[in-house]
Image 1 (cartoon, rainbow, N blue to C red):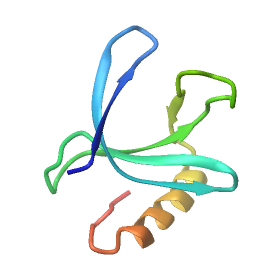
Image 2 (cartoon, one colour; image 1 turned 180 degrees about the vertical axis):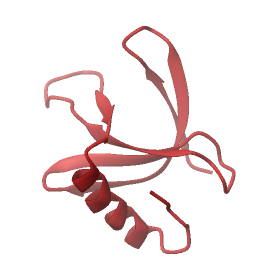
Image 3 (cartoon, rainbow, N blue to C red; image 1 turned 90 degrees about the horizontal axis):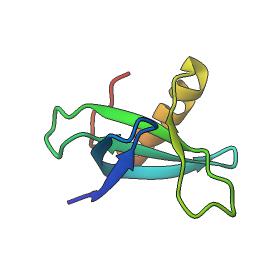
Length: 86
């Protein structure tokens, strides 16, 4: 079972995700998260935008196609037995 984390959005609502994998690319930390533990779960790739001295982590969804493609390839290699679709 993956670690479950809770995110709070800017408007104060919360969303729970399971951390599937994490990696570092070009000095940035990324999380691959899923909305459930089922095989057909919806996944997001989040980039850690936190400053070193911040107490709480700040993540944003990766939306840039080039960055998303590069990070997806890294996660695909790390998770060879899981089908990751863009």
